[in-house]
Length: 300
Length: 309
Image 1 (spheres, each protein chain N blue to C red):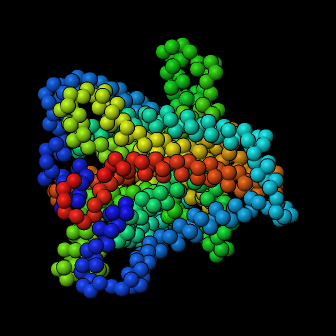
Image 2: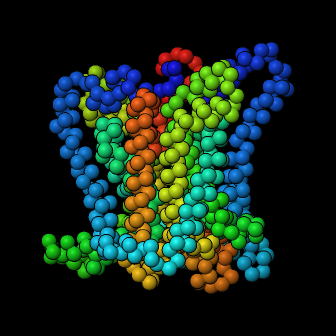
Image 3: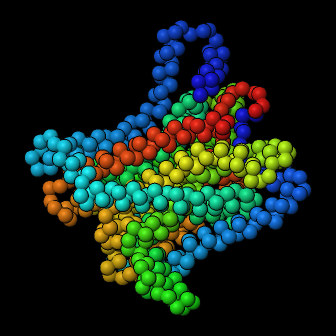
């Protein structure tokens, strides 16, 4: 059991210095000096960040006006565009989960040595310019795919990989997968049962964060959709801007807030669940320190 | 990693009873790769094949189809060279400044107690804002800092200065940099948090027990351990800024000379028709630059991994 080496891994059962993080149990004078010096710069950082991130939101909100929000739903082209974006989000999410969940579980159980390569490969879509990727895709894709917007879903799966893989990887690291699987198998469960009733429930929150991050990405992606000439929601917002600026701004703010609230709900619910079960906290894109020895029983 | 591989294999051999023959073992070993085949095929078709296709096209003339190096020659001269330079400088600055601020923000979050609402808000907001960009983001800053923007107004009211009269403009490389921070800082928070969580509290406690001050802890323990991951994250931010297209396009209306915007213009046929392959050549150059960056990133991660076990 000593293999789960993340600081937050054991939740309620961890030893005190692991649980508290820095500042947990420390010589009194050190704690005191931290209390004096620390919060000042912390609040400065938080205030700066709040100013930089919230003032533009407020400015846009004021520009749009609250009246513009109900108007969003009356605009021509809104429903087809949001419908297409939602369908793309659905297809992308399903494809991403079907592709990435088994792959990540398999890599954790059978090929732990390729985890680092997986990290390297899945980070590529962040650094490869989307504009380069989409022109390449438009060049090689068979004409059957070129005529359907679901081509975008296939490409979005690639774009979603960095976020999806990291969420799932973090989720799998936080449970002692090997022990769970071995226990399940030795109790006579076959692979499908083990996956469905043991592994998946344990990474439910990781799958949820992967889902939300994927949905956020699909609902906001503009470059590829516009170059592939499909009118998704972000493309519609840009086209519609010519008709009514305020409504267009309101629509983009609405999309932003809805995704944010969804993510908050997931993290809060996941937190509560994890505290009850005493398991790890929801890790959003967060990867624990790499534990290296997969099976040995020795302590670090 | 070699050691862990050997140990991972060991228990299977124990359960399989009799010692399998050498061929059976190597067969089993190669069969294990079948499990990552779907992922591998998907990446090959979705990521590698498109890149190969544009590389081939980049070496051919757009109209005649003959083999040529002209596209690369054009791409590395004149306005396109200027675009590459501007892109590089903008991306370097857009990596370092948000990188440092993102690190501080991430550390501030990291030291907040778990389960705190502020922590939740910042982490979820990072997930959302890291994916934010394009026209909506441009809107936000036009509403804030354009000549009639809200903050421009505040500054005029308080200090009596119109910043637009004093050389400030939102529609230049500076403005683009300022706007890019909106998704770069959250991205930094997301990617640097894991590295911060790799700093074991025990190290800090050990350092303090031996009388180290906060400064000497960071100078001799925390800093050196964090540095490779930090540089790795900076490289990631560089790549993210380098490849960003929609935001700069929306903000400046495509007037700024940045490589992704030039590619977009060439492929939309806005400039001169029949220059698609020049656009592909620019794309190849971008990916080559990114590839060099990635190699450095991987080497740094390998170095960081030595300490994070």
